[in-house]
Amino acid sequence: MPDLVLVNSPIHDYSRYPRYTSSYSTPVGLLYVATAARDAGFDVTVLDAEERQLTPAGTAALINAESPRAVGFNVFSINFSIVETITAMIEGPITVIAGGPHISTMRPSHFSARLRGVDIFVRDDGEDKIIQILKGAHPVTVPGVYFRDALGAVVDTGRARPLDLDDLPVPDRGFLTTEPYLRDGLRWMDISISRGCVFTCKFCAGSCKSNGTVYRRRSIPSIHRELRDLIPRHTLGGIQIVDDLPFNGHPDLEEFLDLIDHHHPGLQWEVNFPLQFLRSLSTAQITRMARSGIRRLSFGIESGTPALRRTMGKAAKDEDLFRLVATLSAAGISVKAYFIIGFPGETRAEIRSTLTLAKHLHATAPLFRPRLFMFKPMPGSALWTTLLAEGHPEDRLLDYTDFHVTPDYFKKHAWGTAVRYSEVAPRTIHAMIDAFYAEIGEPTG
Image 1: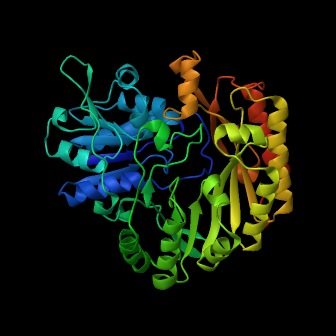
Image 2: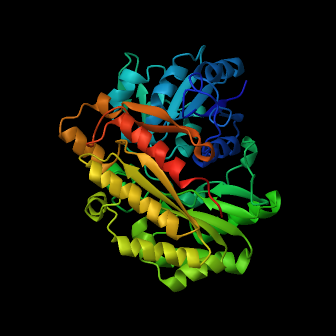
């Protein structure tokens, strides 16, 4: 009987849909918790229900069969109702723990009403809190959690001190079967070097200024220690940095490039940059990144309307975007850019402008890959707070729905909302996204 089973919760209810190949993301945060608990002397396993596309009943059955002392779930806003279903089916004397973005950003009364099968809720960093719980500490003595008292009420133990990321262990990839993964003939892994973001994109729940967290970044020696462990151990050829804001300023980026150039030449890498940071880079810096092995860079443009981009925290003129994409393409860097349609108050004409801009950028840059999403209000974002203040009921804001994207290359389940926030109805937005992918076709380069 293991001490702890950590569950990478399924993002969709796979009892209702065919098992499409989807954009799986390595649960790096869960690996940190698993490794820290194992290093503290506990027997830990990871159940990757999303990678296996398990149904809620199938997930619960596997947990019940293992009968661990405790089970922990990562909970996202889009799948909290799925976790609600799974946790209601957990049997026996198993302590049920939930953490993740949804737990860190929602009010406690929401948990008591919806996640009735959960005993302890972990806010923000989970590594040290899980260890204390497994050691038998009463939750009231563990800062940064919620727990149910004898009467079933949810008790808040207050906010915990943020962890120093350099104190965390190198996550053990042996908990998963998905890493390393192959890309272009090389072995890749996902890594995390920061938590949080200092920018203020209004739709994003990752902004520290709206969700109340603190931005932190690992030191260069800490990153070097992980790369020295992973590269020879797994014969890695590439890493994907999965954070919202891996570098908080040019000096951070330059330090990382020095690390790669001096100690890991030839290593390929992929990263996500906020548009605000990316626009501040010079052509010389972008060229140096290309020489240092960057192969793909992702960033959010969000809207085709400059005024709406400014409102959402993505100020940039169209000509600046074309110039930036041209510079990246000239350096040989593949670009994945994100767009959102259906923002609150967005007109049909503004949505068409977004589709037009995405198509034009795609047509002019062979290495440009647009990705289109439907707006969803996310707890912890500034827009969430605004919509609540405008009188939108919380349950309606959380009324997410998934839909099918059907063109072959992009075929997957995508998340949207059942609520109409723009001039265009949700079902029409679903059709627009489907038609967009059908029109741009599969990547050619």
